[in-house]
Image (cartoon, rainbow, N blue to C red; front, side, top):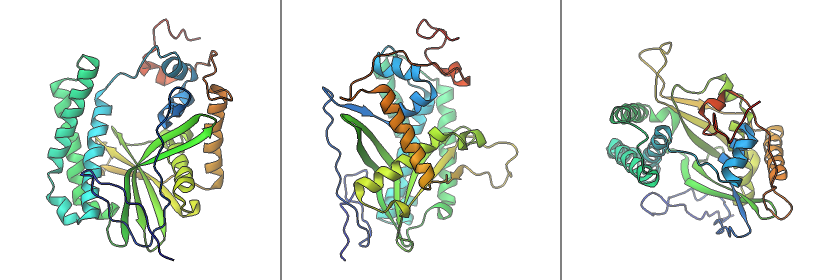
Amino acid sequence: MAKKIQPSMDFNGNPIRTSAKLILNKFTPKEIDYSYQKNVSFSQFQLYSQCPHRWYTQYVERKISTPPNINMTFGTAIHHAFQHYLTVGYNQSFAAADKEDILGIFQTKFVDEYQTQYTKNGSHFSTAAEMREFYEDGAAILNWFKKRRRVYFTNKKHKLVGIEMPIQKEISKNVLFQGFIDLIIYDELMDKIIIYDIKTSTKGWNDWNKKDETKISQVLLYKQFFSELYGFPVDNIDVEFLILKRKITPNEFIEFPKRIQEFKPASGKNKLKTSRDNLNEFVKNCFDNDGKYIMKEHNKNITKLCDWCPLNNTSLCVKG
């Protein structure tokens, strides 16, 4: 059977070359009508799982917003540079990707993103010294990756399917889950899709991060929705986190400090069902049968995350 795929686009708006063997349904997300529909992102679901009260205060009452910070700015910039390098590598060649000014691309995006957030919020949220430190960390990650790219990615029998591929799924009446998958690769030999989610971290993920079911559910939900929307067998989809580490811990072998940590969570039927059930429970608790917010008081989860919460020590959250 002839197999075709609607091509995704690279950063210049050009179609990404994909394998002639791959079958995917055409999918374009619909524009959401906010007069009666609600958009639910994974970040909303994650925030609700951490603290329902903060989710309600931020998304329903709209009494607070997430303030910009240097970690988010850094994450946006290094995602852009990392994805640009892989787009050139798969669309042209990795020899061509190595010739790209990847550090310049990262620096430009880093500065532009900071300026955008500064203009939007009207105040600085970092210092020149901190910006320099984060830039040097990003440069170290990118240089390290370029030298060891073959450990992680090859264009031999592996094809780039998409960068920031859209996901949009109605999970309840007028409530749509929406997101974008960082990176998708097709393994021709194994006839498998690999979904990658790229994270940034100061020193990498510890066991606590790896056991955080809500954090892990992001790729599990993406796996299910990608299968349902694009028509690829769910059993032939693997998921993986790539954690880009800004700092190297002292106990790492000095000559080979790993700047990229790989984590492949279990994604069998039981794990997939649990992630879907948890998302459905969130929707059931927060939206009525017409997709409108349920106006009610939500529980406060008192954890160590409270120290970083914008509600902490304000009249909007009296703990206890």
